[in-house]
Image (cartoon, rainbow, N blue to C red; front, side):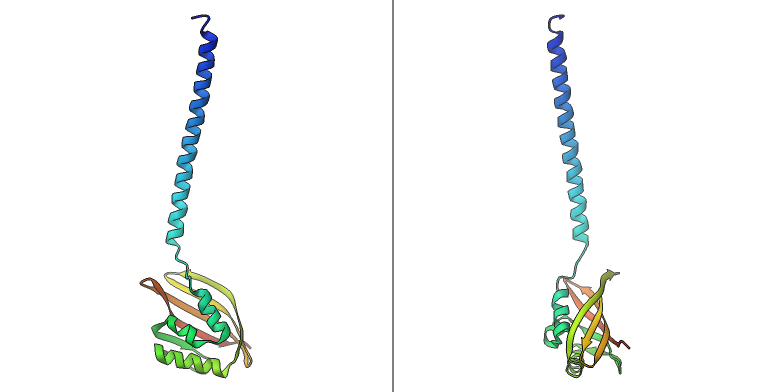
Length: 156
């Protein structure tokens, strides 16, 4: 066995190297798999509101026709001179009157997020007659988000 010792040492060294490489690859594959699974779970659990851009564009242009499909059956509306809960069709008329009386120039989002199933968006609405701190609250129902509350508060 004396003349085979160098070959056995080389064979054991190669086997050890190959085994450690395979184990590292196996562990890396397993770690990568777990990281991908964890990332997928996080992404699936986070529900973003895909139509927020459509809603923001509707407000930015003062287009109540584009905004109204997102109204819930009942919408809480707060305006500088009144505050009430309206049906979807009434809310469309009230917001339409507001946009008619306050010609919209721009709308900039200052904050948005999600809390307890409610998606919110806050921003500054710039009109010809003044600026309004605007807040939108959406509730997730089924597979859609519906606008449940909208506030227009004048900025002094």
